[in-house]
Image 1 (spheres, rainbow, N blue to C red):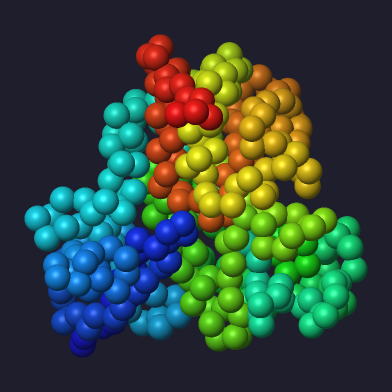
Image 2: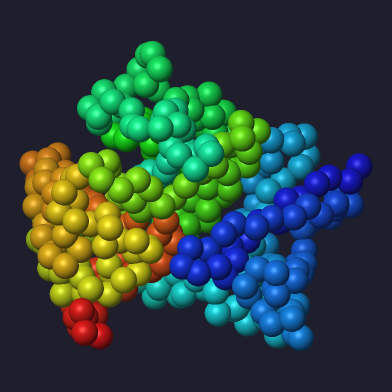
Length: 343
């Protein structure tokens, strides 16, 4: 019996790409093959030469349609089957393959904000809710909004076989988080994009919009990040390797900040548990640092580091590629990348 394959891809909208998808009916016994789309409608091609190619790279069971139906994450290619300029996964794959011997691994903490009628979910039409304080990991009453969506999204991720590690309410009312990992690249990006698509799709049923904006509300409200945890075989054995990685990230800090999502200057201000986007620092248990070393890692003298700079809207393929190239080259004794704000 035929089944439905939902082809999912990332478009070329700037500064923040949009997720796109369309359904293909596939004959029983057939695997999803390459397909195409109109790139002139997704900011990926001119109208006079608009064909783009979808190449399946990651498939999971469809937890919404269920049955034999599947979700198919795709890379975008040109018609000569080379990576499209908007295809960031191909660069991530190259970095992961180059430093595969170091076993770089990732866990990403994805924050986001539920929006409705142009304001965070649960906020009054005029004015503001009570100040931040009771919402983080809160429970009960009118202050916790969107939990039904969270529960359905979490179960959908589990049913799809994604490596979801947990969820929690965040500091601002209407703001939540889920975590994906621990995974190598490019799988960390594959699963993060799939989890984002599921969140968008499930929120549709509640007339709710999911925002990954870095600073969805101006003023004394927390922004939204995608804190990225990173380790290699060396850091899991040696604190010296963690120090080497942190120092390399410091030398290449401006390039990382530029690649870590739009609106980063509004979020990385030095307030609301962030470091300034123009000041690099690292330290144990310091949520005001660019890089936090978890207390358990400092105690054990081995483990992982947490890059707190990536925005909620960061491309997970880009952040994993950047961290691999910067940290693994330094750990290999190579000349790691360096950058300045004038580059």
